[in-house]
Image 1 (spheres, rainbow, N blue to C red):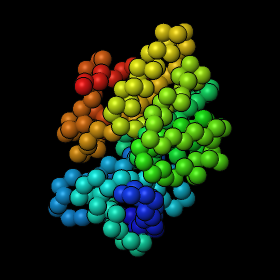
Image 2: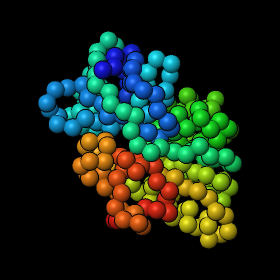
Image 3: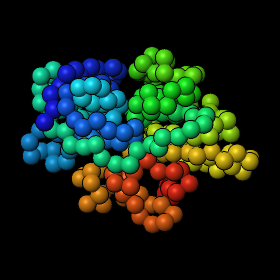
Length: 234
């Protein structure tokens, strides 16, 4: 069990949850959270936003009954915390860009702490949130509202690019990585997939990902994959 330290509303439906407890974790990994009994049936997977001395922080968007319950938590409330799970972003060297779309910025804050002086690109369809927290961690910070943040990223300028966001954004990042390689620049593009998950440990196959070498599991083999490995289906 973990104890809620704070649960701050940052924007419409977006919350920053800080809990005391947990087992740390690496950038790109996630926890399964639960603050209810038998229903809803499934716990909710949330990527690690930050690890601190006393626990873990999460950034989440209210999209259903489970996250609505999480949004109602107050300091002192308890919740079940399982994790960390998954294979996250790698430790890399060279020039790095971190690219997030909407709530996809959540795991990138921890990446920014672990990979200082990265260029950071944050895109939002409407009200931006948490951007000022990224500013002191970035070599250069670009924020876009209402546009396509990937259009601001020169994929030939980086050795590694970490991307997290909605499905169309991830697919577009894959294509931009291919275009960069065609232009003569090998850029390692890593995608954090936001597949629906049930167990978090690879037992149920709900989060199956189509890859060039067959079906893989977002929760156990990912959620981070090299873009070139993933097969996107429209």
